[in-house]
Length: 201
Image (cartoon, rainbow, N blue to C red):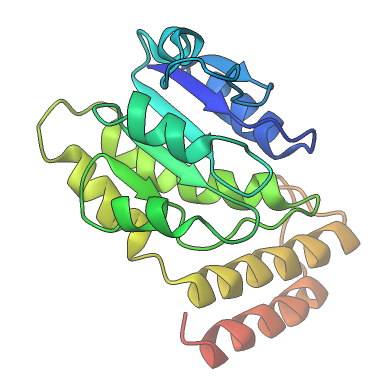
């Protein structure tokens, strides 16, 4: 798919998203400038229309830092599938337009602005794309919307914590898949199993 990322922040969030998309075989154009228009210029300005031409999917940062994101969304992207995201709170207008199942979806929780923001964004984007890639039926975007919006954030955070704990233990033991599981390692892994049971995962 031909993807457009519009995110003018200099943090690594959009870079992580771009790398993920490219690694999965998608073509990516990343727009790193503000969505500005000259005073008195028509809205949408021709540069915005050109930016979105021939795109299959748009990933749009809609936070306060992205000027004119609302106008770009409303005037250029009504017929394009759009995954909206923000590090903080989304504009009410965009949240409302993404509230019904369809081709526009808003990431259910702010990604934050720390170093892990890109990984959190990709974790949700991968759910959305998982319903879209390889399908051509008309219901794929509605299914994808539900996969994103029905995301249990607390459960996802618990799973991430389990994954981190498991990684720490395996690194401590310098374990590789070719190695046998020792009694000591098995004992340490019981803590991860106990956490999983406690959290109902």
